[in-house]
Amino acid sequence: MKLLENKTALITGATRGIGKGIAQAFAKQGANVAFTYSSSVEAAQELEKELISYGVKAKGYQSNAANYEAAQELATDVLKEFGTIDILVNNAGITKDNLLMRISEEDFDTVIEVNLKSVFNLTKAVIRPMMKQRSGSIINMSSVVGLKGNAGQTNYAASKAGIIGFSKSVALELGSRNIRSNVIAPGFIETEMTKSLPEDTVKQWREAIPLKRGGTPNDIANACVFLASDMSSYITGQTLSVDGGM
Image (cartoon, rainbow, N blue to C red; front, side):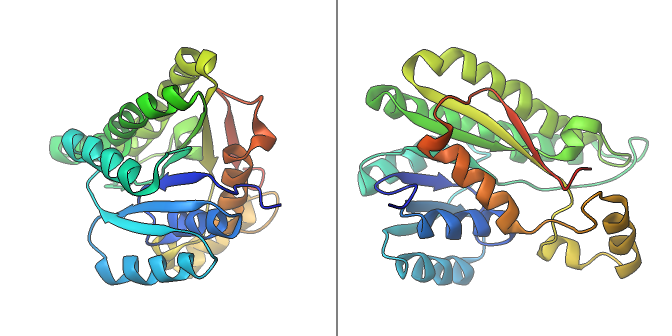
């Protein structure tokens, strides 16, 4: 028996990195997958094909979760196409790093909007259907930076810490309807985004981690499968750090 058989998941920002890893793991566990992407049409079509090859239904939607109307529309479209939304993974995120002295107002606002406001937009869009079916699992992607801060990332840290407070509040509000809300806080995960870093920097990062390696998108995806499945049916309002002991 696959862990996510007959469930439908909506995953944001899934054409690369962590989001892609989650989409692949969910499909392998039998979930139908609706996913969003912002610009990479070809990558989205490739992923759609791959997910369908695991014997599930899959569809990519070009959608900007940071836009309130677009998020509501997306939920409506997914419901029409898939019938239910059982799992929401808010994964889409960006960075615009700079020291606070140099950060522009625009770079602060954009990161808060894409990383935090999108979580509000989509959670708001799926809670009605979830309340009707009296079940749902919401998984929000924070970061080790949201827990302990990081120089040069005030905007990112604020958005990721905000996600934790938001998720805990949702857990309290919707627990009575059997809707769970949890957070995953990844540490140093090696993806396309980290490939551009100098090799020395990456070595230093790995050395500082007790497990002596960077994480993979699959490490995050496995934790998501657990929180999305009925194996975690008595877990809500929690933040799970997947960071190699950082």
